[in-house]
Length: 425
Image 1 (cartoon, one colour):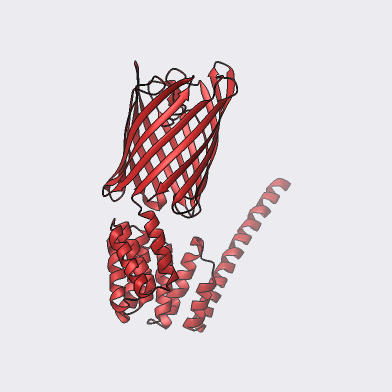
Image 2 (spheres, one colour):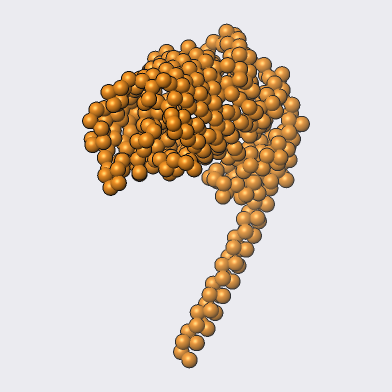
């Protein structure tokens, strides 16, 4: 009887607390509504701007701004801020409506052209973005901000020559605009057509092999209208045997959001595959994701192997994360290859630090991919660092540790260190 009474009191107390909370929330909402009706549009605008710009707060900010607009429907700054919040909240049609309302009242509002450009550019609508930049430049042809935005849109549309010419001409007329000068230099650097590189890697084994391995690569890349093309010559010395492999790679663009990777390699040495081929499709996905699907083919006479590739990547701020796997129905060495890579970019793709963690050996890793000498199990961890030195000369350093079961219940360590230099011109 006592237990039943206690349970009844517990349920009653729970209901009372729930009702009290609902009444409190209703009262708070009512008081806020009453308060905002008594405030001016400027005061409500100030309230909205002071709320932290976090996704959970966007509905509250939007509600306040709408209230302010009922008081002052022609207040451009409020409508502009509302459009930007809609943009951050991925409500793009509502954002466009707000920006266009501002422009309908004031066709010379440069801030509105800049804001609607950002909306379209951030969502990969580059032609629309270019149209808005041009419309704003009609009224403000000397705007540094809009000239930079137009150059960004042109560059995204693969019209880098036009973008560079636009900024070069602007710098001649207005040489003291640091923002334009800096973006011009960055764009020039991004659109250099040629790259020559040389690299060396040293691999040491504590148990598995008595002699270290050595690798040297020379390569040349050229950017073309359809994508980059690279020729490579790889020299290796392992098992006290010298070998050469020649390879050609291409990254042709297929559509706006898809490009490909294609590679062919040939060698007359037993320490390389006699023939290797690879192909992948890379997809640019919404929300800063990307993906890869493809295959690799290795011909170590008489062994021939097909390997399938799957990968998913994600950009967030200056960070990039990628999980890649190689799957083979034929050879166990590749069937459990997984690698998680993380990079932090200081500025562009040439300046970063990174780390990788994984298991198995990638068929794209020619320094460790040897037919007939696969591991039963292997685990790896690596670090990398790349930095521009001077005049588009990039230095890259890498280190990698493998812990490998090369015979049943027999494990060993493998350490490698690499250095490379690449010159863009």
